Structure formats: C-alpha cells, structure tokens
Image (cartoon, rainbow, N blue to C red; front, side, top):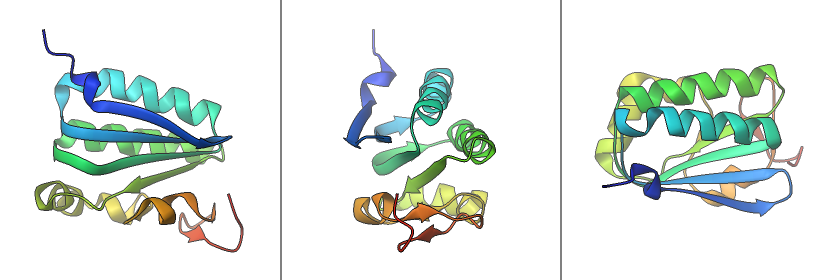
Amino acid sequence: MYDAMEDVHVERPSSGTAVVRFVGEHDLATRDEVSALLHSLVEENDLVVADFSEATFVDSTTLHVLLNVDAVARTWGRGFRIQLDTAAIVRTAFELSGLPSRIECVHSREEALVGGRTHSGIADPVAGP
C-alpha cells in the first residue's frame, strides 16, 4: 500500500524552526495527516516553512489546510511561510486560489528562513527569526 506521507519530510535547520518539504502530489489523501503535522509543528516552533518547491500537484484541500495552519500560527504569534519556487501547475493553483495574498510566500529557502514575521505577514529582514 502506498503511504502518501512518504512525500512529506520535516527538516529542522535551527532551533525553533521547522521546514516541511512537500514532494510529489498532495491532495485529499494526505489532508488529515498534513494538517496534524503542521499544527503540531506550529505549536512547537517559532517558524514553520511549508516548502512546495518539489511538489508536482496540490488540490484545494491542501490549500485549505495551509490557510487553517496560518490562522493558528497568527493566533499563537508564530511564523508560517510557504516556499513556492515550484512547478507551474502548483504555482498556478496557489495563485488562482488567492493564497499568496493571505499567507506569506517566498521563492527560496534563504528568503523563508531570514527575517522575522511582522504584523502584516511580510518578512522583515532586519528583525531576524
């Protein structure tokens, strides 16, 4: 049996920071597990980055999970960013959903990890993590 969560990898580049790499396709099959994982990481870390640079497909359930996690992160005063240097089909799904106007999106790992979170949701490179 195929385990869709095999395509979700957690990295910890520094204390208080987690990067979740999404590889391949992400849809209804992983919704509950991805939601639980991201919520627990937001609870445990100051900054969580959802890296979709290796994703080949996302559906609306995945995008909904990201919106939910971002709302929780904001409530708890935590940072949540999406790294979107990705396949055109994935980038288009994010853009058509309007998600980049609601959640901070960056194009590289360096951008994702640098700076703090401001009230506007835009990274402030001077503030630091």
